[in-house]
Length: 175
Image 1 (cartoon, rainbow, N blue to C red):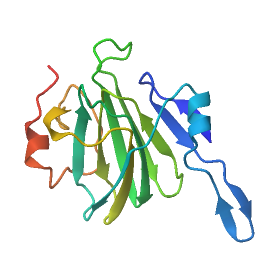
Image 2: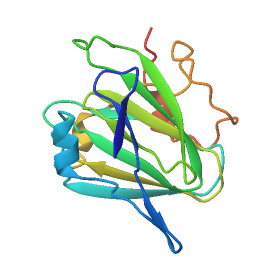
Image 3: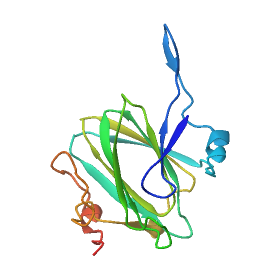
Image 4: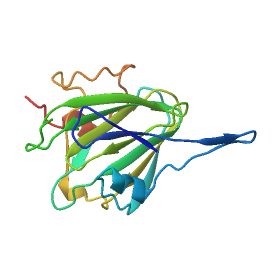
């Protein structure tokens, strides 16, 4: 795996290093040892697969607070998304920084998201599937969010947002 730091402290874009032959390819998509070599302690306890039926749907931006802060490793396994992060850690050198990247089945990249960083995405194709691996169990009582449409974020959602969950429309603005 090839780890590339993003503009948010502790967040990494992770590329595969496929071994190819006439049949296709094989690549490691997660290796605890390789993550630890990057200084990332990540013990997966849950994997979730989200299917989004329509292009344009926005999910997020979510994160969990103490005592269930969660790190995530996410990957688009069908279709494509614009994935967005917002650093919500007051002590972070990149506090309130915003980062976005296209994840799709062509590049096959994944994104490691540290605890305290809000995460969301927009499906860019119908029937998009998105895999989340987390190091904490989902804890609805400590979930927080940032409004996806906050002008302070400047996330360039490529498609008109649609079918946004009511709670995602009601998260507070950063200002």
